[in-house]
Length: 266
Image (tube, rainbow, N blue to C red; front, side, top):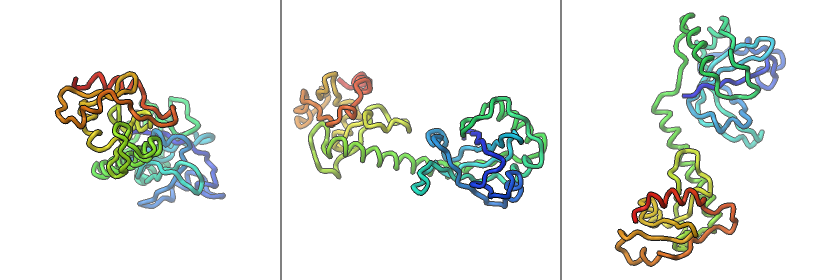
């Protein structure tokens, strides 16, 4: 879980109505209350289960609520913006609204961003002093499900991009049987590196031996094979030129290929 601060205006008809003040809005929340809030470009940072601290700008200039994100940010076609569903922590928020939480030491941001760790420590210490329960988070099982879905969705998008870039053909064999083609990462997948230049479209069996370091790509984009390979079918690939996308900007990254090559089984 990561803590983020979300700055808001005290009066904002888009969030709490024309005549309703921010504090009145949070005072009136009932159990199970959620909101879908805009994120701008913050979707790259915020994830499922992250904690959101709402900061009211002048004249209040203080934290007024806390909640937890129920899922990863989603793109809204209606408003063409990234949004995130926030589940409000009602018991803690009501204590925050009634109390006097500590002022932020760091300069308040203009957009959602990670909150300064020292400010989090001061807020949690204050909540402990006023007898507030620990701010809630999502169950570990739910977070795991979200993470698994996120990986599957990312893989689907990655594969679709590679199919387009490689015109539906395996970069090594030229196979055009789409059901047999897979999105192969050059640099191992870390959750953030689904860029086309970090991948190649490979037939499933070729993907397998590529991941095992039994084939690799040299500095001239030629296929090289390991002496450990027994099958003549794969050995015959040695020295052949890798089939690359028409768009040079989509070509496999040479540095990533070099790193993969350094770990190959010669």
